[in-house]
Length: 424
Image (cartoon, rainbow, N blue to C red; front, side, top):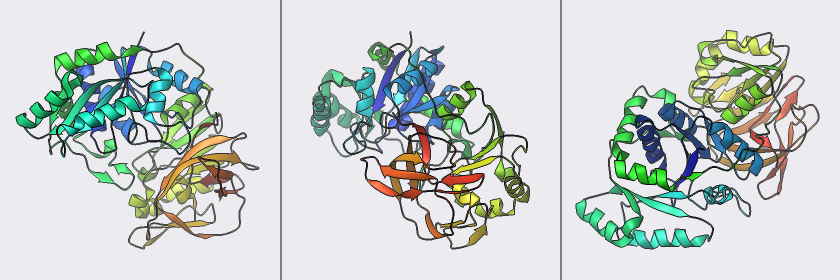
């Protein structure tokens, strides 16, 4: 039976992604069959995980998913696996207001221990008080060991070890060479850097301490029995999915779930000016970074004409929704003509953050029926709209009513929301 453990931190920016990548590759190099998952609505970190393990990485979201779906997804990941490492999101207890959704919530739900990553750049003995506070904040949470990150010297390490004692599993020096560039939605995507493999191997060497790896395996606990990984119904029984650097924000659990329900998926690259297969029942344009490639997309007539003439359903999320619109204005204020299938113009000229979980209720004519959970995370704004049917009724994570989201015009529809699951 596979075992599992959670990697968490007091806050974002503590280094848990780099350490997770290092552990994944170090265990793989040691012959351990390792897989991974990511807590929360994140499209970028799972692609790094997959590069480190060679296996699929799913998002596990205790706010958006039912416990049975989470356990079902874990059962899928645990096949032919010795160890499942689950990377947390933000700080250990951070989540939506008044609802379960944090890394701690997931760890308690699954009965799994936590490896706690502490950024030590600006503290010494005070780290012991921080660890004590996090350990005692939730009586059912088990912090099994501490990884001290970004220490500055042997003396710094000695102070930390004396204060924390046997809780310390690993002590890592600050290393500015192991950094990864960021952009406005997080890290630069894994596939965009040709040095990714060397980066992951360097991270693995950093954490490759045999005694610590053995302790982590000892701390990890067996996973409970499987449950049903119920998923969102597919858009059609055959779906063409856009996939490249501009359209990369698709959830692995959704695509694999559609396949398990009998849907046939094909992939095409809008940036390579590929048109979707004209014979499929639906086209899916996921989110990503179309704003970074707006001029190229606007000139790719084979792709745009393929959308315009497609006879089936055409559905776009966030960046995909923007490309279905009339035009996209980039951060320099330059307007680029898009597919013109929905009467909306979006702009990055004045960036404004839109962020949060969404409860969606499909309106007439949408791709699904029944309530959904979703997430919104973008900096673009709508600057012009013409009349069209709205796609979703919407509420925030606490149930407050929001304006109806998205647009639908005949067979073409989309919104800024990234749909995660059927509502629990």
